Amino acid sequence: MSEKYKTHDGGLYFVTFSVVGWIDLFVRKEYQDFLDENIRFCRENKGLELFCYYILPSHVHWITRRSQGRLSDLLRDFKSFTAKELLKLIRNNPPESRKEWMFQKFRQHGSVSPQKQDYQVWNRNNHSFWLESSWMTDQK
View 1 (cartoon, helix red, strand yellow):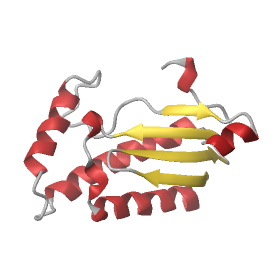
View 2 (view 1 turned 90 degrees about the horizontal axis):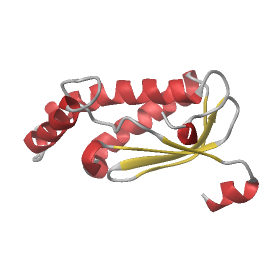
View 3 (view 1 turned 135 degrees about the vertical axis):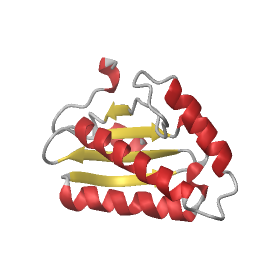
View 4 (view 1 turned 45 degrees about the vertical axis):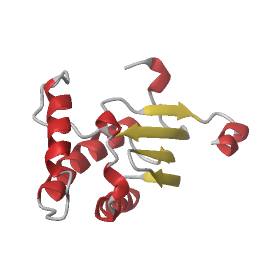
Protein backbone atom coordinates (compact mmCIF):
# COMPACT_ATOMS: atom_id res chain seq x y z
CA MET A 1 0.00 0.00 0.00
CA SER A 2 1.22 3.51 -0.74
CA GLU A 3 2.79 5.35 2.21
CA LYS A 4 0.42 8.19 1.36
CA TYR A 5 -2.62 6.25 2.63
CA LYS A 6 -1.16 4.45 5.65
CA THR A 7 -2.49 5.33 9.10
CA HIS A 8 -0.37 5.84 12.19
CA ASP A 9 -1.41 5.34 15.80
CA GLY A 10 -3.14 8.29 17.42
CA GLY A 11 -3.52 10.35 14.24
CA LEU A 12 -6.74 12.02 13.15
CA TYR A 13 -7.72 11.05 9.61
CA PHE A 14 -10.15 11.89 6.86
CA VAL A 15 -10.92 8.43 5.45
CA THR A 16 -12.81 7.56 2.29
CA PHE A 17 -13.74 4.06 1.23
CA SER A 18 -15.92 3.19 -1.71
CA VAL A 19 -18.01 0.44 -3.25
CA VAL A 20 -16.42 -1.24 -6.29
CA GLY A 21 -17.43 0.28 -9.59
CA TRP A 22 -18.96 3.21 -7.71
CA ILE A 23 -22.16 1.16 -7.40
CA ASP A 24 -24.75 3.34 -5.67
CA LEU A 25 -25.48 0.74 -3.01
CA PHE A 26 -26.44 3.14 -0.24
CA VAL A 27 -29.45 4.66 -1.96
CA ARG A 28 -31.45 2.05 -0.05
CA LYS A 29 -32.24 2.96 3.56
CA GLU A 30 -31.87 -0.60 4.85
CA TYR A 31 -28.23 -0.69 3.68
CA GLN A 32 -27.54 2.73 5.22
CA ASP A 33 -29.11 1.58 8.49
CA PHE A 34 -26.96 -1.54 8.47
CA LEU A 35 -23.81 0.57 8.06
CA ASP A 36 -24.97 2.87 10.88
CA GLU A 37 -25.42 -0.13 13.21
CA ASN A 38 -21.91 -1.37 12.47
CA ILE A 39 -20.39 2.06 12.92
CA ARG A 40 -22.11 2.26 16.31
CA PHE A 41 -20.74 -1.17 17.24
CA CYS A 42 -17.19 -0.09 16.36
CA ARG A 43 -17.57 3.07 18.42
CA GLU A 44 -18.82 1.14 21.45
CA ASN A 45 -16.56 -1.91 21.21
CA LYS A 46 -13.56 -1.32 18.96
CA GLY A 47 -12.15 2.05 20.05
CA LEU A 48 -13.37 3.95 17.00
CA GLU A 49 -13.51 7.68 17.69
CA LEU A 50 -15.69 9.10 14.95
CA PHE A 51 -16.11 12.85 14.83
CA CYS A 52 -18.11 13.07 11.63
CA TYR A 53 -19.23 10.68 8.93
CA TYR A 54 -21.21 10.72 5.72
CA ILE A 55 -22.75 7.81 3.91
CA LEU A 56 -23.06 8.74 0.25
CA PRO A 57 -24.61 6.55 -2.46
CA SER A 58 -21.35 4.81 -3.41
CA HIS A 59 -18.85 5.70 -0.70
CA VAL A 60 -18.32 6.69 2.92
CA HIS A 61 -16.32 9.52 4.53
CA TRP A 62 -15.12 9.49 8.13
CA ILE A 63 -13.18 11.96 10.25
CA THR A 64 -11.78 9.55 12.77
CA ARG A 65 -9.05 8.08 14.88
CA ARG A 66 -8.76 4.97 17.00
CA SER A 67 -8.20 5.15 20.73
CA GLN A 68 -6.78 1.63 20.93
CA GLY A 69 -5.15 -0.39 18.20
CA ARG A 70 -4.48 0.51 14.59
CA LEU A 71 -7.10 2.34 12.56
CA SER A 72 -6.07 0.40 9.46
CA ASP A 73 -6.88 -2.89 11.25
CA LEU A 74 -10.32 -1.61 12.22
CA LEU A 75 -11.02 -0.45 8.65
CA ARG A 76 -9.98 -3.85 7.28
CA ASP A 77 -12.24 -5.70 9.73
CA PHE A 78 -15.15 -3.29 9.24
CA LYS A 79 -15.03 -3.62 5.47
CA SER A 80 -14.65 -7.40 5.58
CA PHE A 81 -17.60 -7.91 7.93
CA THR A 82 -19.89 -5.39 6.26
CA ALA A 83 -19.12 -6.76 2.78
CA LYS A 84 -20.22 -10.28 3.77
CA GLU A 85 -23.33 -9.03 5.54
CA LEU A 86 -24.30 -6.60 2.77
CA LEU A 87 -24.20 -9.47 0.28
CA LYS A 88 -26.64 -11.38 2.51
CA LEU A 89 -28.89 -8.33 2.87
CA ILE A 90 -29.00 -7.77 -0.87
CA ARG A 91 -29.60 -11.45 -1.59
CA ASN A 92 -32.48 -11.61 0.94
CA ASN A 93 -34.09 -8.30 -0.02
CA PRO A 94 -37.08 -9.14 -2.27
CA PRO A 95 -37.70 -5.54 -3.40
CA GLU A 96 -34.09 -5.13 -4.54
CA SER A 97 -34.56 -4.69 -8.29
CA ARG A 98 -30.84 -4.45 -9.10
CA LYS A 99 -29.80 -7.62 -7.27
CA GLU A 100 -28.67 -9.58 -10.31
CA TRP A 101 -26.77 -6.63 -11.78
CA MET A 102 -25.00 -5.85 -8.48
CA PHE A 103 -23.95 -9.45 -7.93
CA GLN A 104 -22.58 -9.56 -11.47
CA LYS A 105 -20.48 -6.45 -10.75
CA PHE A 106 -19.34 -7.73 -7.33
CA ARG A 107 -18.37 -11.07 -8.92
CA GLN A 108 -16.52 -9.33 -11.76
CA HIS A 109 -14.47 -7.21 -9.33
CA GLY A 110 -13.80 -10.21 -7.08
CA SER A 111 -12.48 -12.31 -9.94
CA VAL A 112 -9.78 -9.77 -10.79
CA SER A 113 -8.82 -8.94 -7.20
CA PRO A 114 -5.46 -10.20 -5.94
CA GLN A 115 -7.32 -12.49 -3.51
CA LYS A 116 -9.44 -13.99 -6.33
CA GLN A 117 -12.53 -13.87 -4.14
CA ASP A 118 -16.06 -14.76 -5.22
CA TYR A 119 -17.40 -11.26 -4.63
CA GLN A 120 -15.86 -7.92 -3.77
CA VAL A 121 -18.06 -5.13 -2.36
CA TRP A 122 -15.53 -2.53 -1.18
CA ASN A 123 -12.56 -1.23 -3.11
CA ARG A 124 -9.41 -2.61 -1.61
CA ASN A 125 -7.68 0.65 -0.72
CA ASN A 126 -8.84 3.29 1.73
CA HIS A 127 -7.92 6.88 1.11
CA SER A 128 -6.71 7.92 4.57
CA PHE A 129 -5.60 11.52 4.70
CA TRP A 130 -3.81 12.60 7.88
CA LEU A 131 -5.34 15.77 9.33
CA GLU A 132 -2.18 17.27 10.74
CA SER A 133 -3.57 20.73 11.52
CA SER A 134 -6.81 22.32 12.67
CA TRP A 135 -7.01 24.14 9.34
CA MET A 136 -7.00 20.80 7.48
CA THR A 137 -9.64 19.39 9.83
CA ASP A 138 -11.87 22.43 9.32
CA GLN A 139 -11.42 22.18 5.57
CA LYS A 140 -12.60 18.56 5.53
